[in-house]
Image (cartoon, rainbow, N blue to C red; front, side, top):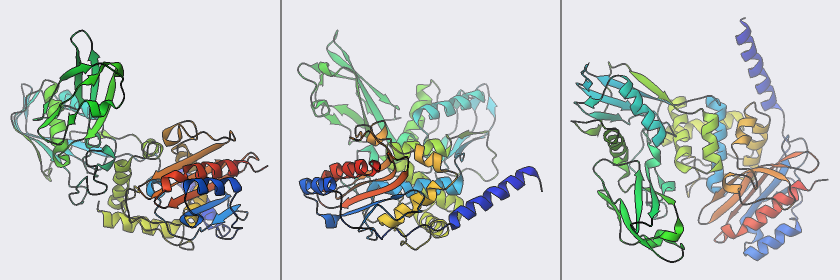
Amino acid sequence: MPRSALHRARATLRLATLAALPLLPLAAAAQALPPEVEAALARAKVPREAVTLLVADADGVRPPRLAWRTQVPVNPASIMKLVTTYAGLDLLGPAYTWNTPVYIDGPVRNGVLEGNLYIRGQGDPKLVIERLWLLMRRVQGLGIQSIAGDIVLDRSAFDTPEADPAAFDGEGLRPYNAAPDALLVNFKSVVMSFQPNRANSTAQVSFDPPLLGVAMQSTLPLSAGECGDWRTTIGAEVADPARMGFTGSYPAACGEKSWAVAYADPGRYAARAIGGLWTEMGHPLKGQVRDGRVPADLKPAFEVNSPPLAEVIRDINKYSNNVMAQQLFLTLGLQQKKRGSLEASRSAIRQWWNDRIGTGEGQPVFDNGSGLSRDERISAAALAKMLQVAWRSPVMPELMSSLPASGVDGTLRKRALRSGGAAHLKTGTLRDAAGVAGYVHGASGRRYVLVAIANHGNAAAARPAFDALVDWATQDN
């Protein structure tokens, strides 16, 4: 057997052996909560019956230190991203990348492509404006300065219905509500940057990316006074797909600011962004930018690769990026079931869960994999068991490093532990759901998995109780 094949076989055997090792039940423990947690819940007016709490050794060899309502399925909010990202690491591998192939259909003469340029989206979660610019530079590198035909966008890799971005919570212009897309460009968002120019009493406004066919107001008056709620002061009008402008003024005291908003017509965003960037780079387009399919007989002129999955999940978990999580979720269906649909992805991740985690603690309810859902459910026992399995997995370092570090970065940057301990935790917040889950490093040197989730009208107010539980978990000497 070749050496590389032998190494793979040994690694597979070790992984199978680790997965087969028993984990102690996660439901059996005293149900008295730490006094500081009880007090924080009382102050938040969140009853004990509205929370699920679990603290257990990461290696699963001892009974849990704390287990409260651990078998109750709850809405985890963005904590569900833990399942999606671990499944991605386990099924695809940390080095997995998405590729976006580009095709030319026609000869290039005197710098003119006498035909169409095709771009096929295959689910890249991070085709941001900088990488799109590099893609366009690669097109230029083919000797193309002008396109006589069309730029055709193939978005057929994902089979998802058109979604109203305002359907979830009425906030359709918030970037966190962007829907997944096989050709997801810049999260379907526009960053508006404001730079005061006191010499002429105006603020210069730049839009990134420029959108083809959309009128964009480039200045607005400066005003005196405190910066305050400057987003209200400028009177942004961004609900019209044909125009982005302002009715107010910009406070000079604010200095330079930026604001990301979702484009009002998300289905046309990719076409407008790609067309706008191409023309801003000084290249004519005689045709249009439209959706279509790549002809079956065309071969790619080149491909643009995404960052590796290990890097992508850092964005997903540290900053709780919903649409990137959904891109990964759909990719699992595309890779495992050969169809980029929600149904295929749910089937793929259910099968993975049964094979890798088992069904002893109950199977989660999967929806879109991001936690931006009213339907997703998981119990603390099931989530903790997955975290224990992940702890013994070869991809544990990549998963842990993707989680926000308490008091350091991501969504935990401002939540340092009073004990001075360390924790890597995924946060989650919806209207009636909030929590944290991940790994806590105890003073004794032991590592614990921790799950704390509230489903209640005051769920967000329970954060101090979660912080108290994390502090309690670190104090294990």
